[in-house]
Image 1 (cartoon, helix red, strand yellow):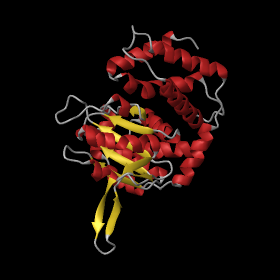
Image 2 (tube, one colour; image 1 turned 135 degrees about the vertical axis):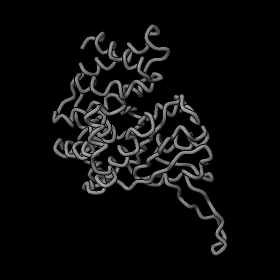
Image 3 (cartoon, helix red, strand yellow; image 1 turned 135 degrees about the horizontal axis):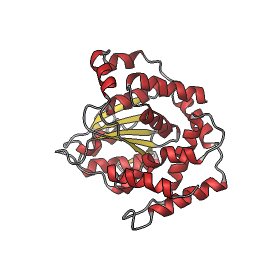
Image 4 (tube, helix red, strand yellow; image 1 turned 180 degrees about the vertical axis):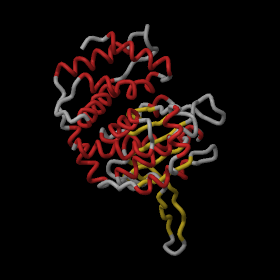
Length: 299
């Protein structure tokens, strides 16, 4: 299992160079069965990362460009009256896939953003009074631009909480940027990458990650971390029990990536900021506070 995960990381890393730490976290997010939010400036590789993950995991995927005029029906689907059968026929939207790439999700108005809430949490959508199941293991990889940019709508806390992780890529270093400027087109590189085993292969990885045991002492450590975030002197609102479950899921996947058959405090620490920051109204200041919190809370 570790070999398969390392190959996935290496494949994405060959396209999105210089961002191996973020690539590892993104792979862990999908193996943990969670949705991924990538937040950063336009042009730093957010969509490239999303496409590379979909390709290398071998998942059926669809991409939706979120805009100010996008309607919920453009994402979920719509029923249209068909004269030949004299009834309404449902036409599925792009959400009926294995992996949905929601590009610039915060450029759509709140009503359209909220259309994804049920899909992300329940893996189903309700259209015309009927619940329609989505693909088993349905994922959302969403990108968003910084909220201070024009034409953006902030995601509500309830929707941010549906994302297991939130990552930021940042600018490349000088050597990496030089390689990008003189190297081959990223889309051409992506097209040559081998496709993965698909949903069945991903389910095997997820089952292996879920089977990684968590010792009672590690659960105690996670509880202390959660309690520390609920200190009003640190944050206005702390992490919920659901965030604690998400943290353990991500830590198990990280342990599997590292080839361990047990979950360690180092695994928790490696994924902590990516799981916690967006639930605590993320930003550079919050990341610094989380780093200090990890130092303060005893193992």
